Amino acid sequence: MAGGQHTFREIMSQPEIWSVALSAFAERRGAFAALWTDAAPDQVIVTGCGSTYYLALTAARLLRRAGVDALACPASELLLCSDSICLPGRRTLMIAVSRSGTTTETVRAQEQFKARIGGSVVAVTCDSASPLALAADLAIAIDAAQERSVAQTRSFSSMALVIQQMAAHLAGEDLGAGSALPELCRHLLESYSDLARSLAEDAAIEKFFFLGSGALYGIACEAMLKMKEMSLSYSEAYHTLEFRHGPMSMAGEDSLVIGLISPLPAKQEIRVLREMGEMGARPLAIAQSSTGLAPEISLPADQLSGCSPILYLPVLQLLAYYRAIIKGCNPDRPQNLSAVISLDDI
Image (cartoon, rainbow, N blue to C red; front, top):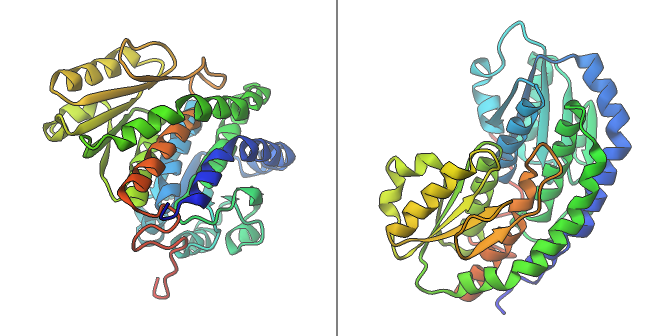
């Protein structure tokens, strides 16, 4: 093996780390509730870079479903174009997400937000001693989720789980339902590892398309990024029904089209996958109920608002990992990438 031992261990350790993440939010839930009451925000901006921007996309949808006016934006946009994002006269709260808590754009965006807007900041990170965490009004840190690999796997999912719990709290849902998620993650990793490996080893597949709607679009983007980072493979992510509007012209016999099927629009999303199959592409559905497609990844009926987005990701992380190994790439140290982006002139 050219490498990847750390990545594999980090993917497979997610059940244990998710339990730590749930405990981290439970310990800070009271502080989060008090901060929310004091801040009384009428707008929430969720920000990050790279993987954590995709996490922000999912987080904003979860918060909106909880009745919060939430917006996701890259930290660089918030830093460089804040006037078009932070509207005057609104009480705005920022949720800043960063694995290291040192990514330059995110740290600078937090500093500028506090100086110009004066709103409260909640940091979600995997380093409780980082500049981001120390400067925030409230930090929720999952230090155990930190990784040796460059590509984020368990860090992404554990931070996403914390924000999923935030949204459930704001929606008045039973947070105890989240306690089942670590074991569900274990079941998925054990049940579908062979499928992920067989698809990764299929030399006829040269393109990977990840489709998702609503809160699952951010997860589709993250799955796309993992495939690019780890294996240097052609991969793209789209809103599911938008795939018909041009991008499907790229799909054919050399393509795996992966649909992250949401419970409510499932009928329409499954139809897209069927159409791609008729065009010669190979469809793969990840869904909570049978799609009639083969193969498919079956998720259990969900505990949180009809959709736990993070459950869709672990098997796709394995797919990217196995593809990297087959191609002779080292997923621990992807080409041209580093774990933290530090900039001196921003």
